[in-house]
Length: 73
Image: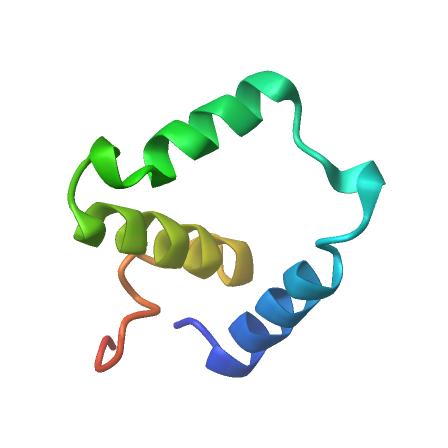
């Protein structure tokens, strides 16, 4: 089970780290992220699932990627 309070802390830390130049991804990773997140890359649902899935797995590695969604058990 994903603790939503833990997820909120992870998001807040990520937000606070935006200006940290030591955390900049490699140019290859940055290019891949931009390609995935581009509106031309596909459905909005996929981008939403990617972010929430990574967040869920960050908070609880055994969680299903969709467990952070509202109403998920």
